[in-house]
Amino acid sequence: MDTPRRSSPPLRSPEERRGDPKNNRWTARELLDLVLDAGTFDSWDEPIDLAYADALPDPGYRAALEAAAEKAGTDESVLTGRGEVRGRPVAVVVNEFGFLAGSIGRAAADRITSAVRRATAEGLPLLASTASGGTRMQEGTPAFVRMAEISRALMDHRAAGLPYLVHLRHPTTGGVYASWGSLGHVTVAEPGALVGFLGPKVYEALNGRPFRPGVQVAENLAAAGVIDGVVAAEDLPAMVDSALAVLVDAPGPGVLPVRAARAVGDHDAWDSIERTRRTDRVGLRDVLAHGATGTLRLRGTDEGERDSTVMVALTRLDDQPCVVVGQDRARQAPGHAMGPGALREARRGMRLAEELGLPLVTVIDTPGAELSPDAEERAIAGEIARCIATLTTMSVPTVSVVLGQGCGGGALAFLPARAVIATEHAWLSPLPPEGASVIVHGDVSHAAEMASRQRVRASDLLADGIVQHVVPEVDGEPARDLAVAVAAEVSALLREMTGRTPVAHAS
Image 1 (cartoon, one colour):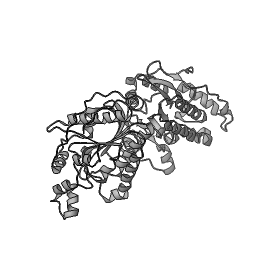
Image 2 (spheres, one colour):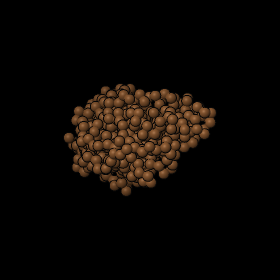
Image 3 (cartoon, helix red, strand yellow):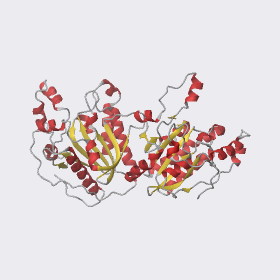
Image 4 (tube, helix red, strand yellow):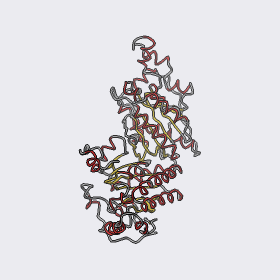
């Protein structure tokens, strides 16, 4: 239902709002008008009965609520309802900072919980946009504990396999950030937004010194792996569109050609290893650039850790929606190997696929996991084990791609999918061949011999049943062509796994 709008300033265009977020905050209604398709918003909000305020100890609280409503043009600090984003239905919960700094009292919390429950019942993805100082201090503990009820409703929503997207506006702090602001499958913040658990003014008052600047800024939190990225409100419709294209849209038929099957060449193992170490070798980024559409990268573990050697993305590989968790060879170099944080990012992607019922595609291309005292203290072995354990127990379709280098435990962590494919020159070994040579012969001069003896080649992996399909390579072909062939092979497997028309695979 549509509730009457209170008098409020006229809506401003994006051009009128650009600049410092502190002085150009989006109102809740402006954001709804900006993000939702015109004319699609249907309010779910019942009128607020202010009688509850009369029973609180503060005799002036009801008057404060009435004044806040007049100032903000809304009857509470949140608006909820249903609309469409580029034609896709979505439920929305939007903070109004102009109403008592967007604080959440009992009425606002109950409104949020009711909206989340309704979104779950109607099978709708949920988009929340926050701008709040946290719990409403005038209402104390009874309001404070309602954050847990909001969180309970959100976890039921997620347990139903429904997406939850979060957009953090300036400012988002306190109990809002520490509950429904931090439970999204995908979480972004607007540029320059103050986002933090502790308000900097409170910190300074309690400790007698200012909070270190720059910590609670959206860009820093994205760099630290706390949130997935920085997205202006103007760009929010495109981000939501990309996410929902993967999270809710049905798979397409696929258009990329699967390479014709042919016998795998009897290549020299060392030649294949040298090929995969070249800088112009196909990589994960090529597969996403040329074989996928609508890719939305997720950054970090969402627990304050980020490692760029692994990429996690929502995407459509040849029009098949999936979560891709892959090793980015371009970001791995001496002194910057794949560490425990990268594996924790990978497990986040695995959990996301499982929770949302999406196929998972892992991509192996690594010279090996980090070998260092720091990695040991941060549980590198345990993270490899947990990746293996997670991947082997997933219920959604899983495909692993040995794209190039497949070295050691870091490769094994991404391997045990239901179906495993490899490119013709890809390889898999317990250690770099040089390391194996040192262990057996005491020097590195027998690396090529060890590679041959250890059966690391794609043809060996196929013969030994470790991989089920090999994507043929063409000498001298550009990375783009092989990337497209890999995406086509993965797409064919996913169609087969999900009961769509099987396609003959390369072997």
